[in-house]
Image (cartoon, rainbow, N blue to C red):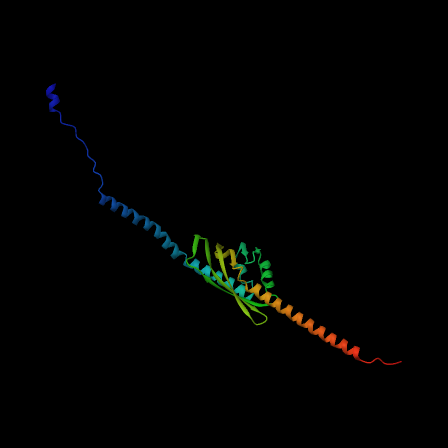
Length: 225
């Protein structure tokens, strides 16, 4: 019995080696590279696949600019989403082409002769989904007044584009401007001041002529009966 105890082999123990710091660094590096690869491949594929979509968005923007500058809104109507919204700088909201067209034509008042707009797009464009994108940038509206003067108004614009029936359409369009730098208001005020001055001068001259005629009539001798 005692001999069997001494003849048994000693128990074996498995010693687990801890990973060295170098191994952990390589593991972390490969993990980062794997994440970057997974992140970049879809982005590159999306950029390549959406080149045709980007051209479609540019086409829609050009048609919208032509409609504003030529006042021919039949050009932009096919490029508007059925549930589109246009918000102007004076906080007016429009959901129908005819209503916006009437509003735009009303801007050509007795003092404003024409309005021309130019657009500048900020990059990069943002695709929220394969069928939804956001585009934004600067805009310059040049107002031509009937007295021969002109003035520029700087604005910002943001457009939400949505693909509808295979065409990129404007779902939402918003304009904003600096309220402290409004050439239309300044031009209207100048015209108003000029009209007031002209009316005052005209009234003064008319009164002076009337007084002169009245004095001359009083100096005429009366005929004796």
